[in-house]
Amino acid sequence: MKPFLAKAWVWIKRYLLAPLPALIIVAVALLLVAVGFKDIQIGGLLAKFFGKPEGKKAIDVANSVPDHRVDANGSLILIGTPDSKGITQAVVVPVETGGLFSDPTVVKVTPPGETKAITIHLPDGVKSGDVHQVVIVSPEIVAVTTKDNSKVTVGQVEDLLKKYGS
Image 1 (tube, rainbow, N blue to C red):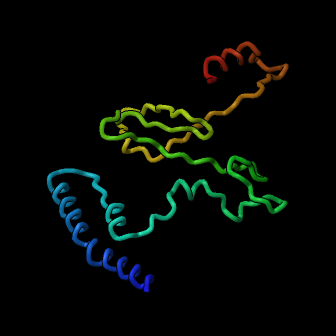
Image 2 (image 1 turned 120 degrees about the vertical axis):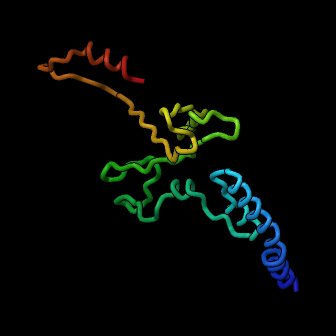
Image 3 (image 1 turned 135 degrees about the horizontal axis):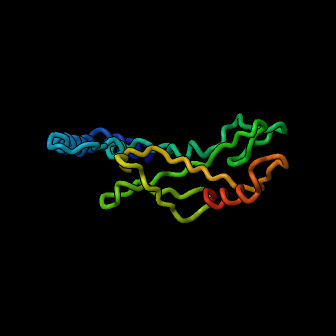
């Protein structure tokens, strides 16, 4: 009897109680759009009212290792480890675009393995809401050598590394 009551309560919530607040939310959203507000999204709120499951987020999917990504021994190639072709699956982190009172000309990203977010200043004309992804490229220089017959001296290379290195 208990499973029947639980199923009945879910049905009552979904088909009798949820439509009224959903209609109110849709009406308010339409009113706000008519007034001039843009980019209003109510799909997530409506999904909660109708009891839809949330599922995996895009970052969770991107940070999962596909079953067919295996090495010659048959073991999974983990994120950050290169495969036989030297291709590495990158770690995906969310872009923090800020809230209502934040600066629209910057976004923040916490690089993988770090705890502090870095601030990235956006180019002129680009707002934080326009940013979809940030690609951080930071190569590590282990050793730089020059050939004996090269016109570039070691001192020049060191000066360039000081100037353009991190």
